[in-house]
Structure formats: structure tokens, C-alpha cells
Length: 379
Image 1 (tube, one colour):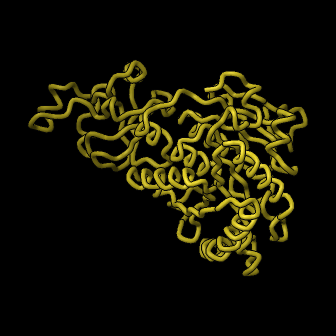
Image 2 (cartoon, rainbow, N blue to C red):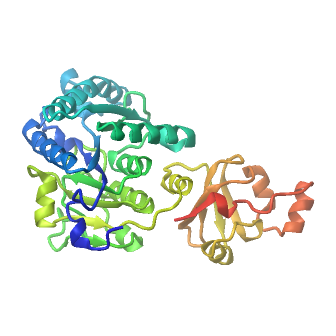
């Protein structure tokens, strides 16, 4: 990890080997639905120069729904109904891919399209497949262009915004950093559109409740699906995986170079890298259930212990053995995530019980822990 903040400004090739660049709909598509080609050419020029300098880049690009809605003349930017959004995405994705292929091709760079769903990165085996594909493409000198497969995604099984997708792709690609090109130039102490006293925060060392409280859920453009809440969630995912994340303005030409010279933006510093399995666990966006624990159990987990039935006060949701569940402290905050050793029915029978009582209740030889420390990650 690079310790010097100045060295990270702009995520230059010499400091960051593998970089994820996320481009939002409002930056790529004009309000009337056309591609902002001149701006995009300036960004692709930067990407080409960075690649020539040795940096490996993956692009996460929104814009399919916005482009498709224009071609199909759909109301509300293609988001009036789920069916409209899916149809717009199917049409717009072809146009979006062609734009990226043409502009990268002008620099003799091959582009690759990868469309993923939430399930592709939440399921461990499919996540590993996506990771292997990204690694092979990058090794071949290709620039992958990734988007959510909105033509098949539904409200229940989708990322919902490409900020979090970019962070998860950063995990899968084992990236060193993620940069979110946004319609706002970073995290402010309050919403700068409604509070003139709001100030930009240049560096966040740790994402705590005070930082999360600064978020506003609204997208400034009205075209994208994410706001500052989704960007902070993305920062939690990326930094937890050992990658830095930056939020910078994309409303100027050559935004990466502008950030490198001006330093204006918000940098979230990476935490220490975890093992691959625990990184995947920490970055998941869906869980099957929750366990609430008492203060003694919470302290034991922070010391690296497994979660025993005696320290659990409540169980929520329906889950099976091997499902991912969250562990909540006494105040309701998520403190850990792991794989359940029991299904929810048995868990509900043994919560708060000592080990000898568990054996009597369930019969046979019970597992010692409800969530073992080897299959758990602290958040």
C-alpha cells in the first residue's frame, strides 16, 4: 500500500498497477439521450496513455438504459417500468459497447464486453469464474468494459447502481484502486446543493457512522441510479478488499488528469488486504439472515473467536447451513459476516444455550459454533 497521500492523487500508473474506472450515465449520455462523444474521447485518451505507461484498467460503464430509451422513444428515460428498463438496456447495450470499442480501437486497444448480474458475484463459484475471465483479459492487453446485465436483472436481484458494481469488480479483479467519476467532486460534510456551508472532505481513513451520516441518497442528474449512499457503500466494499477508492468530478474533460493536477476529490484509504474468500464474504450485498449477539460475544468476535450459541440473543430470516448471514452487535450494527453452521430452525432452538444444552436439544454431537471464525469476516 502506498502511504503517501500525494502519491495516490490521480492513481498514477507508478503507484497503482490495476485500476477500475467507473463512468456514470449522466457523464456518458447527454440529457437528450446522445453520447457525449467529445468528453468520452478525452477520457479514453487518458486511459490509453495510462495503459501505455503500464497501468491495467477495467472500465465499469453505465449508459445502456439511457441510450436504449432514446432509440425506443421510451418515457422517463426508460425507467417508467421494469419491462421498459429491460428493453432499453437490451437495445442500448449494443450501442454502448460499439462506442467503447470504436474509441478504444482508435488507440489500437481491444475492448471486451462483460455483462454481469448480482448473482454472478454473490455466488462463490461464479465470482471465481468472473475473476478468472477478468484476469485473462487484462493479461491479454484487453480493456474489459463491464456493466450490469439490466436486460435480465429484476428489482430483487440487481446491484441497482454501478458504484457498488465497480467496487465488486475491483474485488474480483484484485484491483489496487477504484475511481468513481461522478456528477459531484467528492464527499461533503453535508449536501452541497442545499447547504452552502458544506465542505469537501479530501481524505477518509475509516468509514464510520459519522461519515455514513454525511450521505445523500439523491443522484444530482436524475439520470443515474446511485447517490452518495451507494458511493459510500462502494467505498466500504473496495477499502475492505484492500483497494483505495476515490470519488472525483467527471464533469470536465480529461477528468483523471485534472484530479492528478488539482487533487480535488475524496480519497478513501484502503484497509489491509484479507484472503480471497473473506474478501468475497465482506463484499457481498445479499445475506440470508441475521444473528444478534450480546456485548460479550461481540467482544469475543473482535478477538478472533467463533460465534457460540450462548452469546446469541436473536435470529432473523430463513437460512440453511452454508448460507451467508450477518452478525449484529447489541446496538444493531453489523459487526461480522459469515457462513451459518446450522439452519435457522436449529439455530432458533439453541440460541442462548450452553454447549451441553445444545447437545441435549439437538441430539448427537453438535457443531461447536454457529459461525466458525474460519468462515467469518469482521466488518
